[in-house]
Structures are given as structure tokens and as C-alpha cells.
Length: 274
Image 1 (tube, rainbow, N blue to C red):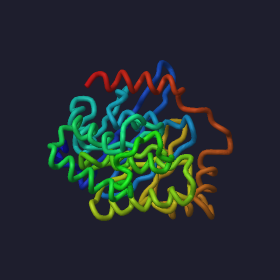
Image 2: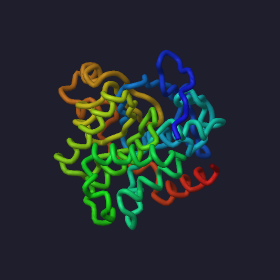
Image 3: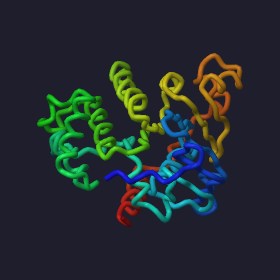
Image 4: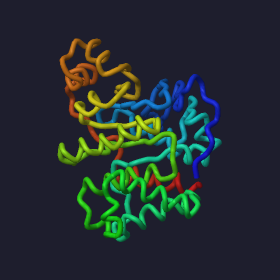
């Protein structure tokens, strides 16, 4: 169930100050500070291994910072995990739906876990499934859905408990251009009509350029640039955001930030502490 907003600084829904995360002697995040205003679409970009996934995990209570401070919707992810988790919805990079359940059952389960009353749960489920154009397919098993349909369902699920913030970790990866455009159309509509703050990562620079109000680019655990897409392009004298991104982060091919096994182990331990 949604948690009432705590008073935040100047309309900020995410505040990060001098954030550090170390794994042994390795600093994955090294003194990062940034903020996100309510009702904006914020792009968080970086090469593989830059630190963006680690920061998202700290914002969403999965990892504990080594030092620094975080506020999400005015709450501290360390001491107020329940309130923080009620404040956001999330679409993971990896599939997270139960493929042996129907679309309706997936949303029903999510609503029960978040304590949404039955009447409100049914109304919100219908509204969201219609929004993402899956209402007519609500009784079909998810295993029969296309990749784009699954993504749309995950977005609907993330919004079911009426969060103030939605985290999207590469929400359109592997989708065709038409489906990518449709998904961003849904997200932009929600942002405009309900003032939901969107915090997203992507490797599609054209997406970030087109939809983000503001962008932060992270590399080697530090923010190397921040501003509107236009300002970042102007600052690097680049004709495209992709050119600006390469100018800021270099041409070197990067390794993945963490293995799939490490990601699942971390996620399992963190959510097991609830």
C-alpha cells in the first residue's frame, strides 16, 4: 500500500549525498551526489561496470552503502525500508513475472503482497491493463506473451500500488523499435498525467535524448556529466547524445558490472531481510 509522502527538500524525491560503496578494496561508487525532482523523467546512464546498477540497488534497499546518505521520497533506505519500498515501483532488467500465471494473476499477487484492498486492487488492475493494452489478454498465461507484452505487464505491475517513483532498469532492451516507442508513450503519459517520477537506465542513447528531462552520466563510480540532453551535447560539442556519451566515457569495451549469480544472491539476501 502506498506510504504518505514525508516532507522533502524543494520537491526532491531522490537525494544522494557523497555516496560510497566498496566491495573489499574496490570502490564501485566513489562519492556520488545527485538529486531528482518530483515529476521528472531522469536518465541514469553509464557503461557496463560504471556503478549505475550498484546505485540503483542502494536506492531500492537491496544494498547497504559503505558511507554517504540517501533519501527516497524523504525516507532513509537503511532505517525505513518498508516506507521506501512502498514509495517506488520497479521494472527489473531481467524478467520477473511468473510465466505460469495469467496477467491478471500476476497483478493480483502483487496487489496482495502490497496490502492493497480488494476493491481498489480490482479497479487499479483493470485501469492499468487497459492502459498497456492487455485487458483483453488478462486471462492468458504470461508464458505465451511476446517480449513487449511482458514488459508492458511489468510496467503495469510496478504501478499497481501507486508509487511516487518508478525505477526502470533498461525497460526496452531487446525490443523492436515500434514496441520501444509504445512503451515510452505509456511511461510519458503516466508521467504527464500523474506526475510519477521516472528513474531509468538504458543503453539506447536515442531513447534518453528523446524522453529524459535530465541525465546523469556515471563512469568508474563517479558522475562525469549531468544536465539536460541538450546541455550535455553542447558541453561536449557533440551532434548526438551517443557521441557525447563516448566522448565522456571513452571507446573501451566494458565488462558486466556483476555476474547473474552475484545479482541473484544479493537480491535474495536483501529481500529476505524484510
